[in-house]
Image (cartoon, rainbow, N blue to C red; front, side, top):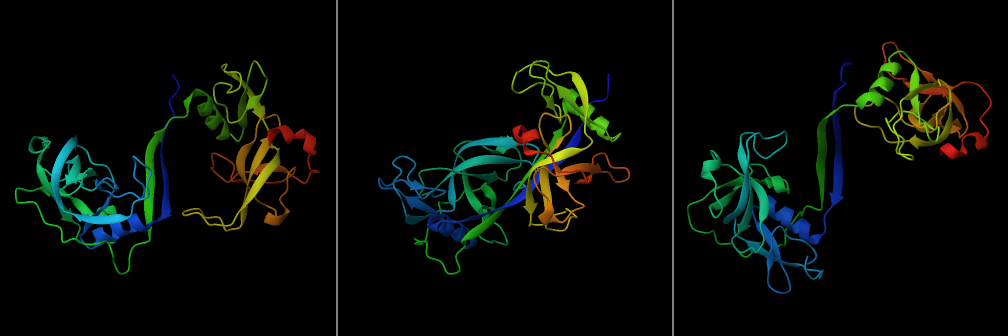
Amino acid sequence: MPEVLRAPLVVEFPFTRSLGPVQSAFLTGLRERVVLGVRTGDGRVLVPPVEYDPVTAEEIRDLVEVAPTGTVTTWAWNHEPRRGQPLDTPFAWVLVRLDGADTALLHALDAPGPEAVRTGMRVRVRWAGERSGAITDIACFEPHDGEAAEPAGHGGEFEDAVHCIVAHARLDYTYSPGRAQAAYIEALSTRRTYGERCPSCAKVYVPPRGACPTCGVATTEQVEVGPRGTVTTFCIVNIKAKNLDIEVPYVYGHIALDGAGLALHGRIGGIPYDQVRMGLRVEPVWTEGARYPDHYRPTGEPDADYDTYKELL
């Protein structure tokens, strides 16, 4: 059997969001070691707080302080913590109903083992040593045998409130391309591009998918396409991406390789960014040892007529 291709991949980006008045007060409170909830019209206290009642959709702004102690309502043991989780040793994920609240907060519980965790056990907040106005200001929960803490009655007014947060989203996974795309990748290493033709509609898919998404039938007939192609549409990139050694502005476009039934993505170089246009004829540029084209450059041919690629937009 041929070797199954696999590769580790990471998708990572910072997500910046602004906070409304309720979330701003909640996160600022955590920075000041204060836990705030919000009271609904029927008297329930929601922690974490939301800006609209999930039952009635009524806007709610009545902030109320709750205690940093509470009761575990349910839990699950995490025997192998992942990167970025609250603790680097095994811990329990718990839902904690803080004293004074009517809903539960999800966080980590530091416990020596699953035998030390139970529904109904009493816990308290362990505050992080350095706090910035984020849910991580609660380092975790820990078992608590003492009395319930008494909130001071904070009203949710703070100086220098947190109004914006940055959440770093990241997904680590292993990608296996399957038969069709594995053959496509292997062909690229020899500077050739292959697609697969649908036996029903005759469209050539590049990269191949192993099946035609329109007809729903398997594709096995390999067809070499390109190497030249036509720019069908494009965008000018003005924001420099992290870890990408390309100066802005640059052009990224859809390129319909000759013989292909749809366009693929590629960077367009060798021409000023403001001269790239629909219909531009391009060819791949390879660098030594590369497994795929570095970019596409103009061939010098006349531009393709719009009618020859309009169905590939």
